[in-house]
Length: 469
Image 1: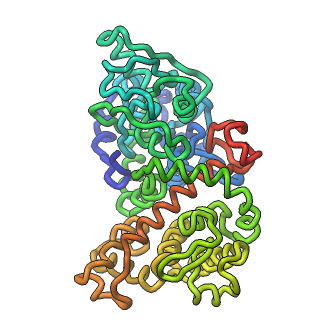
Image 2: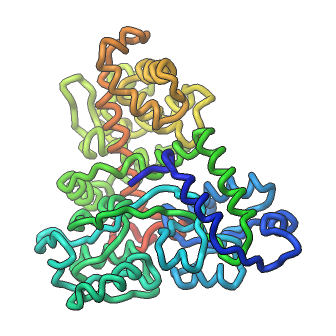
């Protein structure tokens, strides 16, 4: 997957030469939107595109669309659809100005629509269930492939039909790609075809699904506009994304949504999900009671990384308990017995919250937690040293993506001799934060509040540990 930070504006520029059919010749599309005072964006409920958490709108496409509306000087209205066909119908009927929902730029779609600049690229990946025969190419696929109606995957299979007449595939409506992955995991279908980014995220919930193979060429993901409209909105979009890239916003969003999904450990994930079902329920009330302003699922994820939710855990360095507190930290947080689960959780959550408060104010609010977690692992002083190295290398010390990449340099004398606190195991801190982000993502899925919309498609009976599903 190519990231947001390396987005290619060339794709968007090429669309400027496309067909120009204005629906209203008296003014351009951008002027209409600004006169109306509202940008209407069609989308799909999805953890990457758009969803509601505690009645607050979130998602990669939402964050970018919100910034674009501010750039145009108008209000943003997101218009969610429940299927791809319904989504494109909104644009065809003129009910929205554009679509922002992780849509892949394909030849067939380009015949009817115009695409903005590439946000990132994805590889189409055939998914199978572990333990079943793994096909190495489309000609070896013996079962049925289920894909979404109206999807780029359906378009590609249609093109392949004449080459492989024996290929079995079917279209599904009123569902989503994550549910198709669940069907593969549960053995209810043989295969599905999805983007590699979605598979990487979903393996944290369904570890027994895996990539059989990916198609040879990746495709760009971009926003979509009606070909009948003029170029004004597209021109504004190109200028907006150029500015976002220069300001580092795209790099931060790339880190937020994709920075922790690259590595997948099947055994670790299976173990985690089993312990989340067997062990976590007895400690959940303690995490909820002592999380304070933090999400209890985040505190639980830290505890799993530290101790696997074992109250008597200890390491050779002397840290102990569910939150693996040092003697000094325990004393600072008023913990008398580090092996007492409630005291440990209370102390660990309080210490993590204090680290967030002690960070420089220049660090963006949404990234402060990752800096704090690194501090939890190697100490605030070493974290500040990593920021210093990042600055010396001409990078942004307030961007977690940059600091994360520079943490391993704390191992090297060439760099740590330039710091205040010297050598530290920065690579371990890097992995520490990445693991917690993955566990946290899984817990957000397993324990989704009733107020969350569009975060998962799993049914209640699949996860009896949480009645809100």
